[in-house]
Length: 400
Image (cartoon, rainbow, N blue to C red; front, side, top):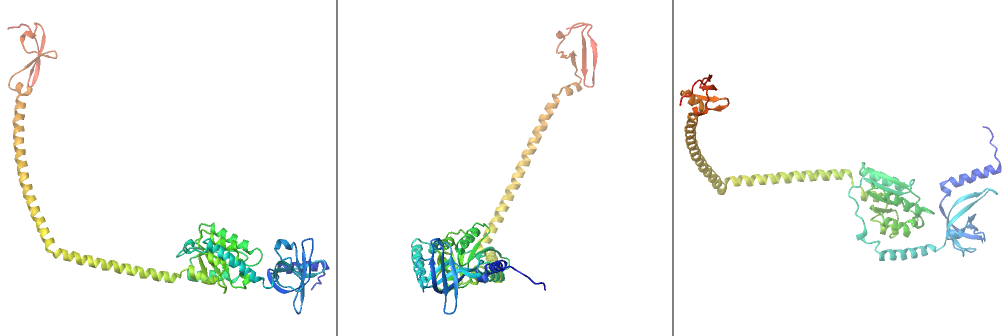
């Protein structure tokens, strides 16, 4: 194997990168006693945290912006939140501090929490009337939780086991430590804007009170309350109630429990549908049998028989009237026909063609019909019309 040779600077840089990229050395709580504390005018804070067997250097840059207490002193027992880093110049590792709580300060947090609860309760944020109904069969579920924790796996596995056709959208966030509150709020708001999402589950698995405290923050609780989409608070914990449990539309004791509450079992749904189908068929069959029985009873009833007889009598009466009416119409038609023939005969007798056949003629001079000799002149050409033709003559003499 070829020898690897590094400079001290290279080695320190590699160690620093390793420490800062390793999740085990990021975002953790550390308890101990303060020693050698120094507040600098530059805005930085340096101290050593120790226990009975060891100590570690700690630093907080611009500590005032992190709301770190300014009255820490030698010997104070504290709990800090931070991550490991390395000072490359001397190769010493140290804790980069983001938050500090004095021993017993958790009690103050609970006092503040209770004040917030009373405030929100007074303003109606916990009222049942303000909670959205949970859909009976959500098709698309959004999840806001850590993308690598057990919670998201538990929700997905449980939901898919109960109803494999369900669609799940995951918005991965930090669920504890610095920045987690903003990420949770952003995740909820993002999923709430997606029209296809029917339901949101937001939460995490179990942990210490400190680990869960992001879900006791007022802004996070209000994000749960203000969604247009039904939302479930699913945080595994044993304390009474987190703030998000009270403002959500539904509270689940764990992420797995959340999936069980909102995703029905497909096999039970199919059984229920089959049961309802059978009941509907039975009801229809029973109703049909009742109607048939009622119809048979009506057929045998005196009223129906009497009605049918009445209908038959009325029908016979109508038929008799119809026959008489036909006879009257036929007689009338015969009379009208005879009268028409008489009139036609008269018309035929007056027809010029009939007159011509009886030996009469018609005399015309040009287009004028001659009705007497007074209308004629000597030498005039005339046409004499017979029933079977005509002749042309010229008048040589007129006798009156």
